[in-house]
Length: 457
Image 1: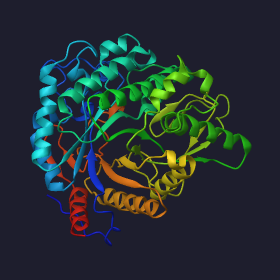
Image 2: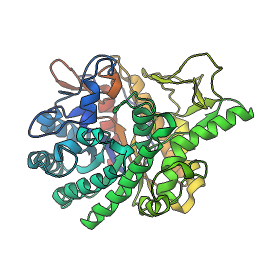
Image 3: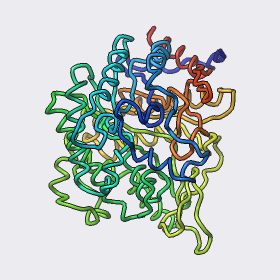
């Protein structure tokens, strides 16, 4: 077991009641996709199509958390986090997405919650982390309004079972990515390539969020948030074409998903493109939240589209078609993760301060629900440097007046990294995919020691 080197200096002091946690998702770690009555998910179907997953793998076993959750909770306890963000697999609870409830699926989450509480760790379930039941996907998935209603009914079932022991809830994870990558570009499940015709999926996810908030509160569940992905958008140059392209990218990845929730309205540029009784829906979407979750990984440098005939633009492993009215560019001068993402901790400070300036009192307390990095090598000093830098950047935002109440590392375990398969390792704990043996990395020990120092006050 490799021990971490001592950090160069102690982290700044965070509040005593600050929530420290780590995050995972069901589709990436659970496995057991055909056990105990679980239904098929959109990701099961997507991964079964040849060529969809870069290394040809699938999530059927993943890290086998379904059978090894006690071992993983023991790792959480030793790490010293106070909270664990996991996701509930919708098709494990409702195999067809609606109708019959699978008791065995709920039993699993019962056991997991009880194991966490016995270890002194607060369970923080995310109700949806991209694993739409395939039966609903075949009926249109998030492109159709009915899926939002089905999601609210599912949320009610989960809260009815776990609500007596769960004190913090998350409705959705990253609806922007599901809209863009799943329905817009086809590079994630369900593999649709609709470009801007994917916007209904954004609206219906947000509507599902609002309906789920109502369903949770009807079950007397409180302390509710959402986990939206956000990052600063920088124009490639002061030229008008580049600033316009950056503004559009910022609208689609940030404002489109934050403003309906926080302000109760869509940006004017897209307000007429969304389906249904939008004004009525926005009253539901903007149900007041107890806190607002932000997943942060990197800023994005954006310019005008590439010249005609130049072919698709590669960005962070994603192929962007040239007909898009913007083109992300490479950010130079910063170290990069093995995913090719620039490591820019100060952009987290910029993001949080800009959100406070943009939304003012409409922004509730913030929780960083994901932040992490992919490194493949056996050495782990890069991950330690990444975490150290981002925690200092987070503290700087708090000193600048942003109310931040928690921080969750992505991720506890190396896992199935969506379309990348098992080729990207985000975990604090190394997983041998042949044996499923867990081995804490140097960053795990560094974070454990840092949390102990924070606890000593």
